[in-house]
Image 1 (spheres, one colour):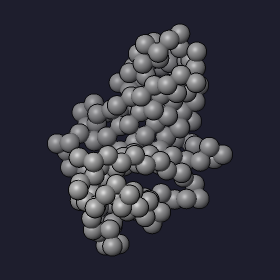
Image 2 (spheres, rainbow over the protein chains, first blue to last red; image 1 turned 90 degrees about the horizontal axis):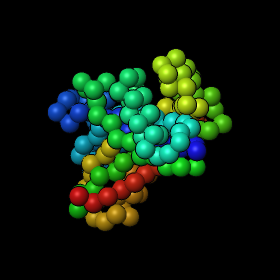
Image 3 (tube, rainbow over the protein chains, first blue to last red; image 1 turned 30 degrees about the vertical axis):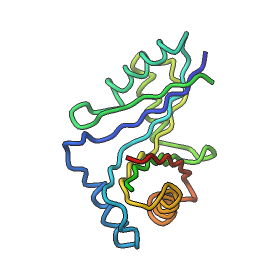
Image 4 (cartoon, rainbow over the protein chains, first blue to last red; image 1 turned 180 degrees about the horizontal axis):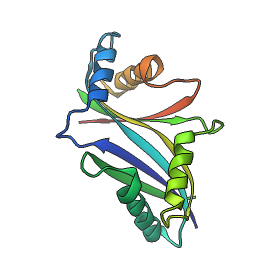
Length: 83
Length: 83
């Protein structure tokens, strides 16, 4: 079966996010001062083959741990759907 | 009311995504050859104040068009929830 995994990789809440702060300051200078906080991370979309959803989730977890996310600075959330 | 907007900004499907190709080649060298395709984009989380969900959505659309996304190369999807 084929699956699409949508992964959000975001900096931990406790850490300063300089890219988010820069975007926030940009938005506030552009008449969008209702925006109070911005955090910027990565979105990764993986297409993969696996026997079932549990195996797909396991593969994506491995990919996140080994390559995609830096656990010291980032957390990730995974959503998997069959296609 | 306060809202959180989760925005995914991804390169258009028609375009080559060199960052995605690099990640794909990395994963395939790491016993994760079941992964067939990778696309890498940005995930932005905005906290904002607005009168209602329609106004929040409108503000986030403006932010995407004016600053966050490059419409020539990227498309975006927005999910808004009240907090």
